[in-house]
Length: 386
Image (cartoon, rainbow, N blue to C red):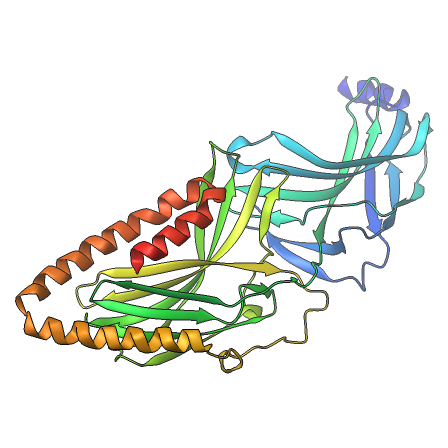
């Protein structure tokens, strides 16, 4: 019956299978990361730097005699878009032969070493895209299916401190209603950094209920013109409850260490990018939302333990800024006085404010389409906001 067929298959080495294990050197001492896969299971991977040697051994126990035409191990890096399943785009592929064609009857072990493998991009598991690096052992057979075994690793790359790292300073507002200036200590932060900032109210003529700050990750996949953007809010917290008064300043402190962040990725293999934004939102009594989004750049610092803190007190106000502020205050005072004398106009102001908000809400969408034009759009937006 079928039993004797199996025996015959095993005898000629076709029905045999093999138990393969891939063991990496120094596994116990190496740092690991827990990553959720598609099925929401947590997988634990060993962390490697992008150019670190990947050394280890492969052990194979055949269930019976196996005839093969070669055994190899590969180090593979590939990108897969969630909406383009099964289509793998290779970013790295290195192969080493472990054994040339022959017959295997007993347990065998081979050592391997991928020296300085140049993994240019970091491993990434996002909303719509996955970049993974893995080892794959293949036992190639002529008459039967190949036997394969895979083991994933997780790659990170450390960045260099940015040469230029200016403060972010912006004045935004709605004519005669609201005028605020916000400032963040720097525009680029390492992943264990602290974002320190302050918000300064130059003019407040609408009743603000509360204000919140959100950190948003925006993942863009595909390449123009077929770019798909999806954002997720990493954290959102209230920075002020109640109505601010003119001249008030609100401090901001956001410890990045608490969140699961990646560096900013520009164009990974021309297939995806990841950007981060600070979104400042003010909500008035009528639940209208006024917001301003600012990009911040993240990079991975080696060690990244010592905190390179700048407090806003360390950012001196230049005389030009002081003049500008005093001028703005003077203008705000005059505007407020004028407004009191023209109470009827106030209703109109509120309407203008509303249309300005609606315009503001539509704008970010247009901004996402073309990243190059993005900077200009932001500047225009500021001018418009001013």
